[in-house]
Length: 267
Image 1: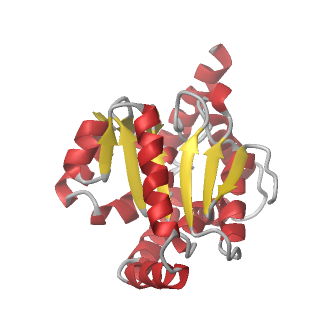
Image 2: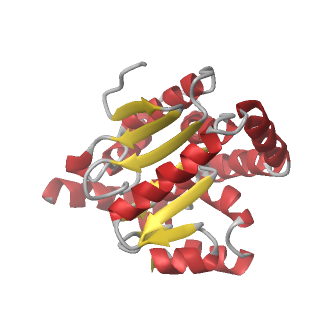
Image 3: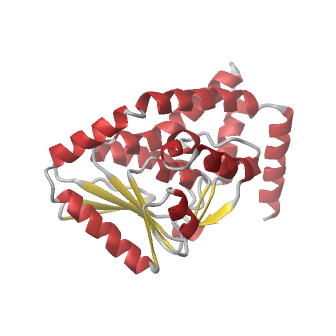
């Protein structure tokens, strides 16, 4: 198997355990980890001996989302770009989107096993997964509006099939924090478990059930299900990339980003 700087892979009985491995930073996704996710899923898609994936986070948290320093790097690279800055940023956003789209497009089903924090970019990450399980101690937030931007990596495009339109809008507008119990009640999570141990046991039990079935049938089923949403999601991702490329260089957004830079320097 390939090795990665911020991901760990363990394969047992055709089930791959993929772990986000930056626990000292609450598995915040820096630039390297972000693009490693796309790389590993493109590799998984070529493997005949992987029939299901369990995605979890090392340490006490699932993921605190995108590392803010990564986002600032994207903005700084745009500021320093000599050509069309809006188009440069749009292409950067589209490139970032590909890492999570690789999960949705991978023929092998992924079960996200979520414990602890799952906010911001981590919601984008799990929105691309096929099945989501969580512990009672997990909590969630579509928090991008707090940063002065709309979520642009898949949450707004993919979760329409899980959350009601009104519920998704409320959570995305307010950046409210909500529990695993609420996530289950609203349809974001398939099931919740009292302990992390129970969560992981259930995730692997489900993964093994899937892995024991004919892989060609499971993959054909996923491909068929994706047909229902692929065009809508692709159009939505392209549109939000254009929206954010125009929004982020605006005075209001740049002021918010400057405030984030100042906050980071003081922390």
